[in-house]
Length: 358
Ligand SMILES: [Mn+2]
Image (cartoon, rainbow, N blue to C red; front, side, top):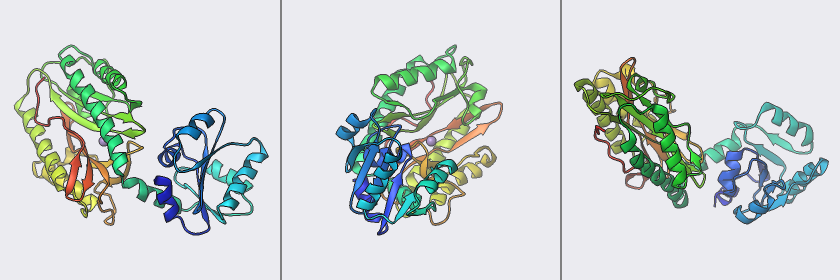
């Protein structure tokens, strides 16, 4: 369906030449490190090499699959396809093409007009933001795996256990439960390390009275999940409780505010204003959330820097993840992933959010 939607949106006489791995996957639903996807108004062809041809032929959707020719014949193959699709202008993914690749295409594609502007990126980004029911199911599949893995890992978190062991357990369990991989390097940071929003799990052994923040996700059928929870271990101080509850109220308000028509920057402001009003504004440095899909970070961004025209729409999948980080002390972040629906937003995440003391 994704190829068909792009075909509808393409300007007459243009052919999109998609070379990035992520967008090839998005459109063909087939993962390969090599390939060229040509999409014109009247057809779509995925050209790939012998390592992938058998699987690509069986699994790619809405396009013809062809084995790539070698040498100069390869370019003849591209030109034949472009001509067949009536292409005069070739649109490239400007934001994903290297300058070297662009130069290579310029040298070869003498008889066509080449468009390295943002035209194609805009079409693709607009489309990728709106998730279908099928994509929703894949994202939910990723989330379910991630949640089960965390629930299975929690009993192992206790004083003396190292951050890296928590991260490794979580990754292992996600794989065992069917994840193709992890969404990004799992963050499991405890004690003072938890004040670093994207800290790296190391040899630090968890102590009684620590917070541990776990930010992680699973990849399922090419789609990512993204969740963060902060837990207390053994005991919790009044200051920890206070900060946790400020983040929690900001996160709940952010989740509650999500709806079609809301400017992305306003979604950020809902969370930020609560943290500011509580006196912790300077300790919440990152943006409130981001889109998720075939990439862990995609559009739209829930950010104070988002343009006023960025408006949440039905089908957008975004995270809401405010945090407070007190250097040398501790940090708290709570993150859910949600899809904007006709009547608000559907939360992928069903993990509890109230402060849990492990
Ligand atoms: Mn995130």
